[in-house]
Figure 1 (cartoon, rainbow, N blue to C red):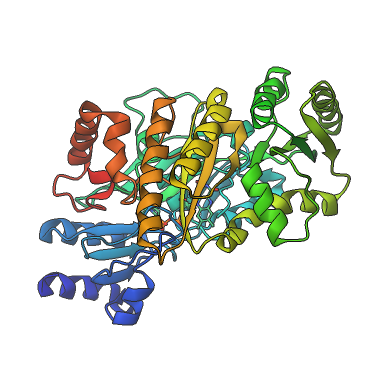
Figure 2 (cartoon, rainbow, N blue to C red):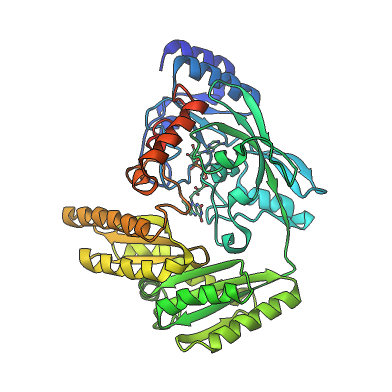
Amino acid sequence: METDAIKKIKKIFKDRCLTDKLSRIQYSYDATQRMYLPDVVILVENTREISELMKIANKYKIPVVPRGWGSGFTGGALNVDGGICLSLEKMDRVIELDLENMMIWVEAGMVNWDLQEYVKPYGLFFPPDPSSWKFSTIGGNIAENAGGPRAVKYGVMKDWVKGLELILADGSVITVGSKNIKDVAGYDLVDLIVGSEGTLAIVTRALLKLHPLPEAKKTLQIVFDNMREAAAMVNKILLSGVIPVAIEFVDKFAIKTVKDATNVNLPEADAILIIEIDGNRAEVELQTQKIEQLAKNNKSVISFFVAKNAEEEGKIWFARRTISPTLKRIADGKLNEDIVVPRSKLAEMIERLEKISKKYDLPIVNFGHAGDGNIHVNIMYHTDSADETKKANRAMEEVFSECIKLGGSITGEHGVGITKQDFLEKQLGRTQIELLRRIKKAFDPNNIINPHKMRL
Ligand SMILES: Cc1cc2nc3c(=O)[nH]c(=O)nc-3n(C[C@H](O)[C@H](O)[C@H](O)COP(=O)(O)OP(=O)(O)OC[C@H]3O[C@@H](n4cnc5c(N)ncnc54)[C@H](O)[C@@H]3O)c2cc1C
């Protein structure tokens, strides 16, 4: 970076402009465990100073990579081209809680969990619940259009962001969106920014919708001897008029992994569905009865269980949550991706994954959000084997292309970043990629905001 630019930046940020090696290393990685050193890390505190910073960066054409808590799985927060790591971790305040409209303005660096805790005493919650909610920020959640188990009923970030304060590449500050439930004035820039992976603008503040906390909830578990029937059950439940908060699935390889690694008493089965329902007490009772009836009518159901208390709920979720940490027992290498297919294709995709596993002679463990067709595919291999490493990468390529053939997407949660950029054009096609590039150019003519992510 040019010394002139560094001097100007240091003058604004003083001891919040970090150039020592240790700090740069601390901000050089994310959950991909790849490393790219930024030239400088800046701990920003407010909109005005970010605007000043962007004017300098734009003038000297310095890459700026916005960063939340670095929990991303696709390298989005990595300074691939060096430059400035713009950390929003200090911008974590609530600006305005509007109870009448059930909305809240927060700074982008606020951790999702802290927001949940803040609104809970008011009888409210913020529905998007990525599993990383204790260590990911609202800005990062917006950039990746994050979602979690609750997406079946409550949707993902796109469904809950009403407005944004943005800083553009040239330093201009704009507010897009509004508190109006209906607002069709101009293009919907809020929707464009949500899921744009920090490539178009810096999000400094977000206006989010909130939802009243449900009166009651219940967790159910259905065990199947047939994966196809488990997948079909998801649709049957929804068609019956029950919209569960979450419908998670665990496949037979994941069940075996957990059984081998823990003393959890899981049955020999092809698949498990974990279902969470919420609402008022009467609604929850009725929904439970409907699902129980569907389970009773299904010959592939081995068992149906309703948790009676928090301890039993914990036991049901334990199996699902234990999969990831136990995978390392199979092999030290893991390629994990977050493909998504239309719900109706879930069973077919699982069968194709089994075929790929046999073809490459590598274990593939699958689990995820059955309610929205989102499968966490884990291809396991030994990193000291060049042959297995090559096979694992080839197997993942095949996973992506089978998923696209079924009308699915290479990413349902984690975005494209740098890890999946080779596959984006395969899914979207050349014309759409060119259109995305033109949009990027309109926002950021000098290509300084998170350059080269998604290969735009
Ligand atoms: C154990 C684990 C579980 C996870 N579970 C889920 C899950 O269930 N669902 C899910 O969707 N994801 C999940 N993730 C992925 C990750 O947590 C999410 O993508 C999260 O939204 C990233 O937030 P972050 O603050 O860590 O962002 P970072 O990793 O710091 O950044 C991610 C991207 O957002 C951009 N960005 C960050 N802040 C801003 C800003 N203010 N303005 C503009 N761009 C910005 C960055 O440039 C980067 O491109 C998981 C990750 C881990 C490690």
